[in-house]
Amino acid sequence: MSTLNIVTYPDKFLRLSAAPVKDIAGTIQKMIEDMAYTMYESKGVGLAAIQVGFDKSLIVYDVSQGEGKRSIQVLINPKIIESHGRITSEKEGCLSVPDLRADVKRAESVLVEGFNRDGNPRRIDAEGHLAIVLQHEIDHLNGILFIDHLSVLKKELYKRHIKKKIRGK
Ligand code: NI
Image 1 (cartoon, rainbow, N blue to C red):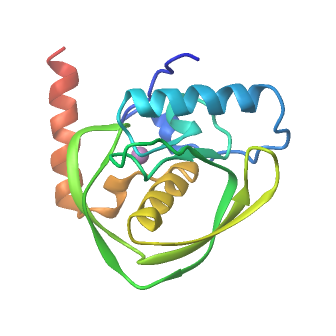
Image 2: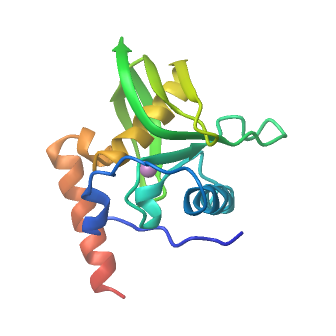
Image 3: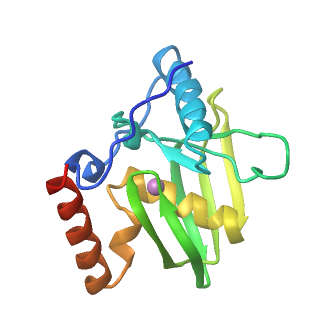
């Protein structure tokens, strides 16, 4: 397994829409292993393929972290079928959006459909933290970052911060 390079804002690659996965053999299985490894190494709770420079509809996540044992979850071609309610996700962050944590308005519960790594259909009725993680990762597959849900002012301040940081290098 190897650590993959994480693409960070403002890289335009993060704005691509991921293409559906059509073949779950070979490349995809290796990518799942490497994405999981990279996610744990970076102490993330979720990672979308687009974040590691692979524009396919694939996410990995693990919301069990901190409870001792790891439980990696894989979703291929995930889609949000239904969403209900509103909650604020507190101090949401993203491995592709360094130096920022912010509160984001999200749906309270979502019904997600996709496929597992063996190609079998999965249907997940998620609420709370899991619902937030799924919305965040599925957003990535549509070229959306959590900063897109913030106010224009907050987003502008973050843009400036990153510009400054890049200039300072
Ligand atoms: Ni993210």
